[in-house]
Image 1 (spheres, one colour):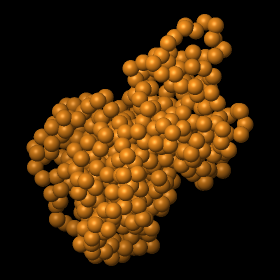
Image 2: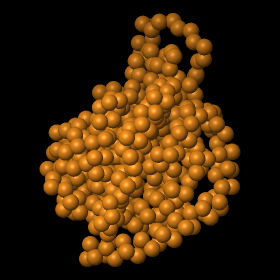
Image 3: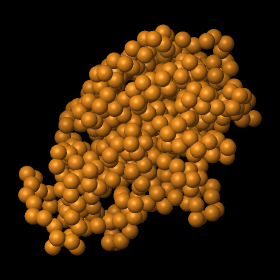
Image 4: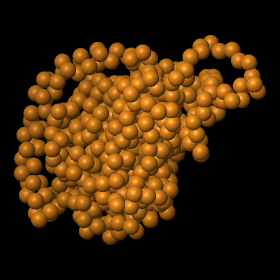
Length: 461
């Protein structure tokens, strides 16, 4: 993944978790004689950088099979109901379940936009166990959807005392940020419409204080766009800009319903975009203008979003969906995304969005986050344009091994850091318990759904 995106045949030297030497076979005569503790014969394999899932909700791994046949505004009622019913053990297992899914498909790092502040330590303990790179962005929210949509005049008090929130994040940074060089903390305002100016400015203050990035949802649906333009004098982006958050530290998930001026503003402010093709389609949200973002040379990564509104958290599916979706509404085939575009989104760009980490590229000085793919499969028939074959035909079954910071985390069809089958067994055993715990919250969701359905139909009719 250098600037030329070249593919070379050669050998790689890794020391202390870092790539320290790349030796093309065509230059073997000039290569130094080296010895190593471990030598891997990777003949007839493809070695690619570890990929990044730049927008993801770990708790949702326990919600597979729940409601996914509703638009976002209605769907949110149910995912919130289930989410608030999860305890610390549920969260711990959900993180490990998702980590296994991602590692198996060559994802070595993610942004977990995490909605449950009281459970964040359980999530981080699980990530520490998994040996994955994670940037966790605990959500901040003090405006309910009912308040934003105009169903309630009651002011939310979802955050409580802001001084307590400051203390919470101070402790979180002190205890976890940069732990083991794999765990980072981000600020995670849920979405601009779910935050007051006070809450957004708190995020800006904490971002400046600790020197960390910010991650949020942005303009996922048409309803958000229309009501946002009515609510804020300069729309959703103006709301963010007023708080000082529109800058190179900000990454936004979705960015579907933007007008041209807003796209230009995001470009001007060097905001990064995370494309979530599966959830945008599953919830009927729309098609993000990713080709325009790429044409404007903006930084665009890929996200799998939540299990209950998309697909498995596998980078190959994200890449393929992004590629195909860019061609749906465009007759100008010269603007269609190419396999190399989406591969870059999954590797270099995703890693850059995650705090500019030195991953996503095979180069000296970069972390040894690497994926070994067996080319002796039906995905790779011709010995040419390997990136195209990888994107169009691979589904993760050819992944033989995954390395994170020089240590193997997946080898011979087995997650090495924890017992994946035991995690699955525990999750399946607890599924009926979760169903019982959530019944009361689901009843409340059904009541709210009737009101929202009327609003939804009136809005679109």
